[in-house]
Image (tube, rainbow, N blue to C red; front, side):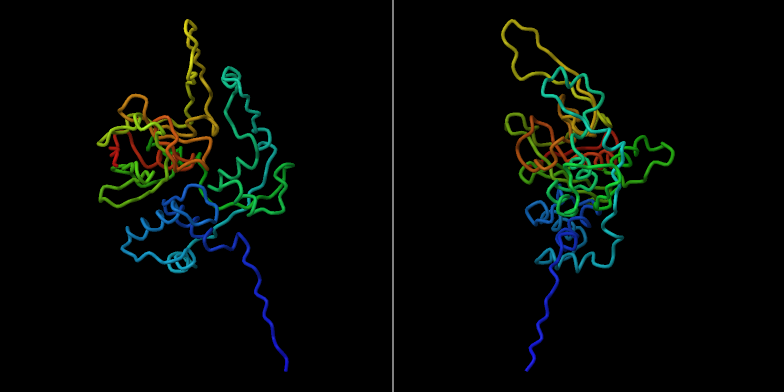
Length: 308
């Protein structure tokens, strides 16, 4: 008797349905923050909100969810980018000294890994897993890197003002809601439909949390700079302040949406993988790509409701 043994090929990371589901939800505006192929609280919340808006039952597993909601219905998930000499030349050796940071032309990425992970809304570990043959410590021009296919942050930040020629079209938010308990920012259109969901970080010090109730967006700044003031100045010494330049590694990231509560706003961050906790100084902090998207959705005057 001959026994036939069938060996199934192992599913690669790029073929993971969990990874595919995170990419598809992100494209629909329901972000899990950094895409990593691991299912957790932020991914589950994105799936549940996506299904609730469409009156759909929530599938039990990410694999079932991808098959039911997106399989065969979306454009290709990935693209291949080529590392250029301009990419390498744009890297920044970030000094520790506050005064030295103020002398930089831009607070840019320090590594190609950071740069390309952010282009793909990925964790740095996920970028490595998608590109197992790439030596990220010794990058040269011409290297091909596989990424989830998303619009660039520059495209998102080109939205305002609306009359700008060739600006990409985006839906317009009529209201934003911030949940302090769920660490989430959600945008809604005029019909009350949720059009975006973003994980956020909130103030570590509860005394610095904005009160529950309504605020509004009073200004927007693409690629903002940052005024750094030391936490402590010795008695009798003059307070030193430094203007740090804009860039993806600026403390307020790539976009600032100021609120009508002095000093408070919604903004990006140089540390996207830290989002989803109580750790900011008081503002609502998002991954850079999500801050850029929120910027694209919200005109000045948009109400922002802070909820428990």
